[in-house]
Picture 1 (cartoon, helix red, strand yellow):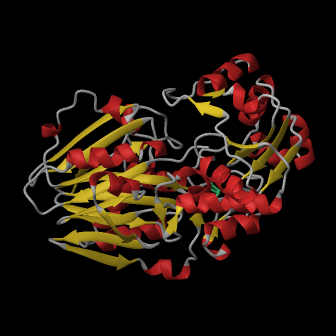
Picture 2: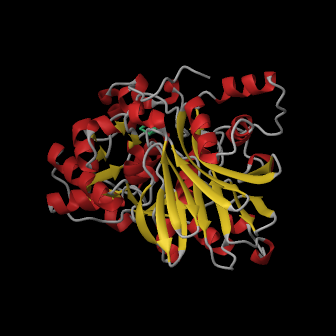
Picture 3: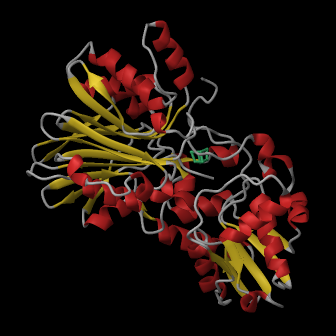
Length: 457
Ligand code: SF4
């Protein structure tokens, strides 16, 4: 599973360049997208930008940040689900708007972007990329032609789009941010001295020493005037329930982030504790699938008093996953990423903790690796319920026919994986571990109850 993108914005009134601070913020958000990265700045008279393919360090290799001057900036790291992975589709998306410069960076997916694109094409708008950003830009242009008030422009655009998103805009000298009315994607605000910072996750603040002020509320537009944060609540947000994506807590967000008041590390420890309450297994060692399952495994170990061990080691220097044609080569690809510590595994009854199973192919390879390393028993516990349906909100997951739990019973999956136990965390325990009311979460891929109309294109 992959999320789509991380965003950062910085507003300063001081005479300085903030692009390198945006860069560091993006560095902390690299887990949210590794296909391309970019930063746009405004220096008081001109917009500047740089985009590049790959990891941030590749996109900005040997880059001189003096070429990105200005005290207002936005940045983006991308994982594509709409539009190919190519430079033209990278963000921030930069253009001019009725004599002003505009840069847009967003995280998420617009479900009805095809129909909006068709509507705009019929009205004569010409597209140069396949991204949602360009759809957004023309929607903004269309509304901005009717009013000079940019918050009203954003509000009218938000009324038209269906989906999950967080966005930052730079319109000449002004930084705006908006979070979707259901708050599906995270977005938070921090203060760093006199400067303000906006980011997808609070880890981006930690790295530059900014202090979290609060989350951007669902359906809230934020902008900055001199030293003040201004807020505008979009009217339709009052009639839309919160639907925070549960997988931010289970998997996507970094464990050192805080989202909507919830400490992600503690949430994952709780997931492990709840797994123990549901599956009390007699074993020698609790092993996580690194990295995202480490806190849940620690949680299980603390609750059960069964020792925690790093039986699998992740090679952190493997770049993008490449598609391997044969099963044998796929196993090599998994081994490149994960290798067992035989002395921790051999002859032992293992509780293996993973955060989720999507297609089941990685789990299968992982089990094979553990068996080859001499595991006596493997009890696989999953920190969320079975994923039975796709995500329509910017999470690259799989189609329904590829999802192992959509097409097999738990008994059949257990048999296919060849484990002694397969246990999924129940939905109630997961919600309890996250600590946000059931009614305020998106659980669409788990229970097929989506918070928005998913049939619009
Ligand atoms: S469908 Fe699943 S992955 Fe997608 S937003 Fe909802 S909970 Fe998150």
